[in-house]
Length: 142
Image 1 (cartoon, one colour):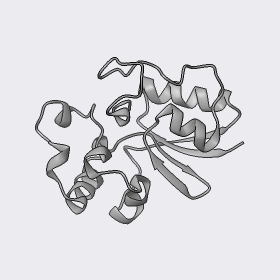
Image 2: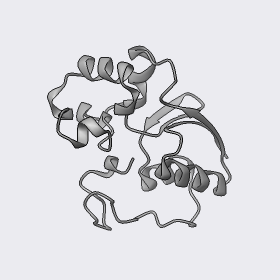
Image 3: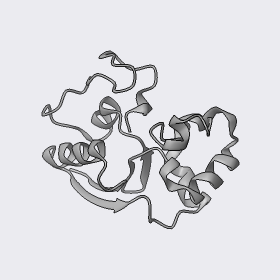
C-alpha cells in the first residue's frame, strides 16, 4: 500500500471523504495544509503534469465561482504565480506518492494509480453537473 502526502484544505468535506477512503483502502495518509504550505512555482508545477492550465484551478474557489478569475484566461506562468499568492486557487487535493505528484481526486484515476476499495462508488454523481457517467469536467470534484 502507498504512503500519500495529501495536501488539503482543512475542513473540506470532500478532502475528508477522500482521506477516509484512501485509509480504508489500506493507504497511509499524511495530511498537510495546502493553504499554509510554502509554495513556489517550481514546487507546485509538477503536480499538474500534462493537465491543461485551466484544470489547475479549484472551481470552488470564491473568485473562480464568482467569475472574477477565468481559469482559461491565464498562461502557465500567470496561473502558478497566482496560486503561489492565493493557494485557495489550487485544485485539490495535491498528492505525492513516492515522488509521483498529482492534482485532484478523480476516483477512477486514483484507483488505477494506487487502488481504492469499493466502500465508495467510483462513479459518484458529479456535484457540478450531477451526471453519474464520467463527467466532462471530472477535475471539478475538488
